[in-house]
Image (cartoon, rainbow, N blue to C red; front, side, top):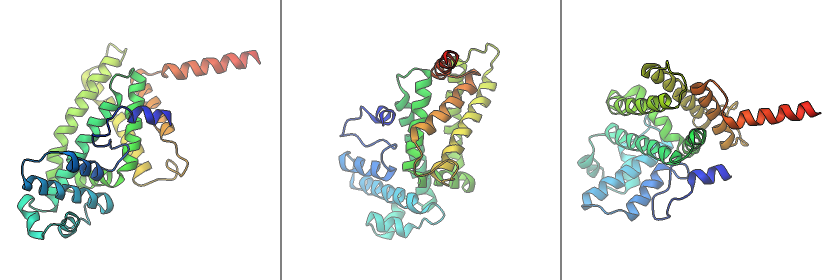
Length: 253
């Protein structure tokens, strides 16, 4: 699909894959294979992170066991405790790193694009990345609701993202009365729309949204048109043009 190729294009094969095309554990494995580590200990710590990412993707936070992480990493149980206090600490480390990377790569996907296309490419990236990493997306929600220590890491990062989003909305909006506080609320509403829609599609797989023939590009367009309308109170130009063409055809017939 052309839209997916545009989002995923231009990445040298020597770099780890984007999360739209690979699970986070596979991304980390490629980093392990190609990266330089300052010590054997740092390499062991990284192997434990890969193992935890694999276990979290497959089983979630609640069922995570330190023994399973050690088995996947092929290290002794005592080795784990040299690097991490418990399963909660390694889960926070892995899930926060995953979230940081997914936002970084989403920004990369939109870089250089015009406004609607940037919105669309960002949303398409999230559609693909959530589909590829549903277990870690679920873990994010589990940790956010159950682990205060996770929230202390997540909330400042999320607030920075919301501030960036509000500034973008202020730059894009033609409404001279729009305040920063109002832009924050609009951004939070739009972000919530995208997250909950994609969570239902990728994680809980609600049949109304996700089916065997669901098209990622169609999902991304639905979300992007609603996002654009939420900021500009009008359709993006390509929809306006399409509606005008349809009206002209109807008038001639």
